[in-house]
Amino acid sequence: MKKISTLIFCRDDVDKTIKLVEHVLDVSDQIVLMDSSNRKNFSKLEKSIKSFPKGKINLYHTIALGYPDPMRAYGIGKCRHEWILYIDTDERINAELKKDIRKIVNNPKCDAFAIKRYEHAHLSGEKEEFFTWQIRLYNKNKIYYRGLLHEQPIVKGSLKKLNDKYCMLHIDELKTKGSKRRDLEYSLIKKYYDRLSYKMLNERMKEYLEKLVLPEDKKIENTTMGRIVLGWMKFYQAVTLKKEHNEISTFDYFIFFSMIEGAYVMKRKDIKYLFGEAVPTVMNDTKGASKFKKEKNSDEIFEISKSVNSQGIIRYLMLDKDPVVEKLNKKYEKSRQGISLLMKLLEDRYKGNYP
Image (cartoon, rainbow, N blue to C red; front, side, top):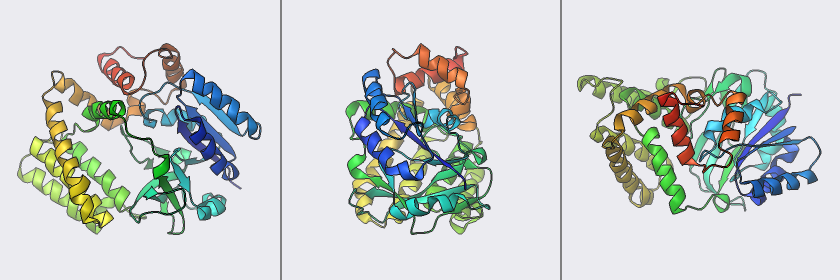
C-alpha cells in the first residue's frame, strides 16, 4: 500500500492550519507544514501540533515570499513518501475522495491525478457549479513546476482526471480577505508575471485552457478547443510577422486578457460575471501591462520575466537546493518579507548578487 505525504503551506493563521490538519489527518501518513509566520505565530503552531500523533507532522519555518509557489520544491523535498496531496488552508477534499484516496494512488498506471476544484464553495458543502482542474495528487518523482505564479505542475508520466464524485472545495469562508497592502504587493509581482513574449503568450494560453478543459491522455493542443484557440493565435502571429521572443503589444495584451476572461465566462455560464468582473479585469490588466512597459527599468524586468517563465522561479532562484533556502532563511529572517523580498531576490539573481 502506497503512503501519502500531505503538503500544506501556511502563514500567520494557526487556527485555519490546525483545522486543515484535522481534516487530512486520517488520509495522511505524513503532514508537512511549511510555515512562514512571524516567530510568535510559529511558536503557537509548534505548540498546537503537539496534540497530534508524534512524528506524523513535520513543521518547517521558511521566509515569506508573498505566496507559496517559490518554496514548493523545498516543501516537496521534505515529504518522505512518493505520493503527495498538495492542499491549501482554504481548501477541503470531499468525503468520497477522503474515503478512496488510498485506492486511487495505488493505481499502477497513473503518475498524477487532476481533481475538480469548485472555486466557490462553503463549509456546509454547498457549492457553485463553476470548477477548474487542479493537479494536486501526484507522484513527486513524476512532476516538476516551471513558472512564476499559480501554475500547474508539468507531469512527466501519465495523468488521469478523477471522476465527478471526487472533488476539492475552495471555501469562501476560509479565503484570505483582501487588503490594500496585499493587493498592492500582488500588483507588483504581476510586472514579472504579466510581461509576455509571443512564445510565453502561447504557453500561458495553454496553461489556462488546461485548467478549464483538461484533456485526458492527450495534449490540449490536440483537442478541438486547443486546435482552434492555439491555431488562431499562431496564424495571427505569423501573418503579422510577430517574433516569438519580442514582447507582445498593448493591443495583444488586451486580446490575451479578453480571451482568458471570455473562457471563464463561457465556463461559468454566467452573463452577470461578464460585466461584473470580466470586463473590468480585462481593462485593469491591460492598463497595468501598458504601465509596466513604460517603467524606467522596463527592459530589465522583461528579461527577468523571460528567464523566470522559461526556467521557472524555483530553478531561477535555485530554491530546489536546500543550502540556498537555508541561507536565505538565515539571511532574511529579521528583514521585511513578502513580495518585496521576492522582487529583490529576482533582481539580485539577474545582477549576479545572489544568493
